[in-house]
Length: 548
Ligand SMILES: Cc1cc2nc3c(=O)[nH]c(=O)nc-3n(C[C@H](O)[C@H](O)[C@H](O)COP(=O)(O)OP(=O)(O)OC[C@H]3O[C@@H](n4cnc5c(N)ncnc54)[C@H](O)[C@@H]3O)c2cc1C
Image (cartoon, rainbow, N blue to C red):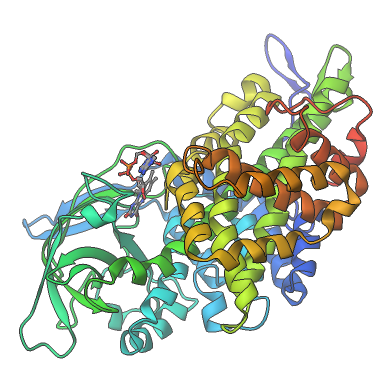
């Protein structure tokens, strides 16, 4: 675009990437949706993709991050209210996400492929704004934990399943729809929740198994939720409680928001510190079994960490390839410069592997209860894929940002938001080491899980000798349990790469699978993007990743 200014013409600047369908323009995602059993969801995904790509929706994402949420602890007459006020754009995004079932679709309409369909929606919608997906994720994830207490689930699930977003601050029973959060982490530690100091005392004679919770939580990322799953120390040990914002009798539950965190990551969502002043919570599951109860929620939010990271990578590729197709340097479009092509294609490979592995994993969440193989795959692959996609996201975002040069640093562009958000999923719901240790726990306690993993890899190695060699090496490494803990990152990384490669050799074009195996499985990869060997079909890879 050429615009007249007093001193110069503005030219060679890239127009905003808007007015496109984020779903149909993502060939990798669309193929994975079909492959993993959610083809039926295509019409809705296309509608959501068009909505996400609209300039007006992208402006909502910008506004929601430009205007941070604010805490109001008291009303004008001095009553404690503990309210967070968000920009209207945040509420609009929440309403759109909820109306498309991102918060509960697979529970209210549990048809085969429902988790895959939702996973694809999250990958699309998270590209608009990551922040509001936090409460959306937690609402989705709370349901399997609540089902440990059927009468509580029977009360809350219909409210959670509503596709109406209702931000009003009143008792859940008076609302048109509810959202949920979680409060586990305390000041002294988040990974080791058994060290929680918040106490829970049973209300004597209460048939609803109500307890009074007293203590603090150091991270509570959706403090306007209608209910929270909270871990606290009951006499029988660490236990899980559903703690509503308002009590059933219409009184405010004393959950005090102390302050909002000034944190890295998105700015649209409000992460807070809270105190529980004898707040009422209903016991979910058994006393002393809190970790086992909440693990169901944790697994589902871990899946969302993977989806978020895949989404960040996809948006990074979309922005970088779009920019390179419009910006010239040294007389040629960036997209035509061999070294830039190498960087873009390498970013695209990572994004493709992340999306393919995320959607395959989502299929394991769709499997019926009795499907032992898929349950074992879910157990082992959730931490494996979380570790690796979350590890790659920050490097990926940094490199995508560099493709835009200085323009990538300008806050009005989406790149700074991608970059700030990129490490969050790696910390939330288990940081890298903790996730690797969880893989070791799965290997130790559920030996059939690794069998399911190898069964999933199957004979994929017959299509690529580098994959076959990497799988052989991994077998050897796993066979030596003695030093596994200190080697855990290296082993889990290779488990993820072998899994991703097995998907690509089966389902991706040869150019993609070949470049992925050559750069990630052999001795040649340095980890830096843009180091694919000469002779790689860069144009072939990029053709399926450039958005429009
Ligand atoms: C943006 C954001 C939002 C969040 N929202 C919420 C929320 O809504 N609710 C909530 O409950 N929590 C929330 N959290 C907290 C998050 O879950 C914790 O930060 C996380 O679990 C890590 O706990 P920690 O911060 O106490 O770190 P620590 O537990 O102190 O861990 C520090 C480091 O030590 C490593 N480590 C720990 N144990 C071992 C070990 N045995 N061997 C080797 N290394 C180890 C960890 O991997 C980590 O790198 C949020 C965090 C962030 C960043």
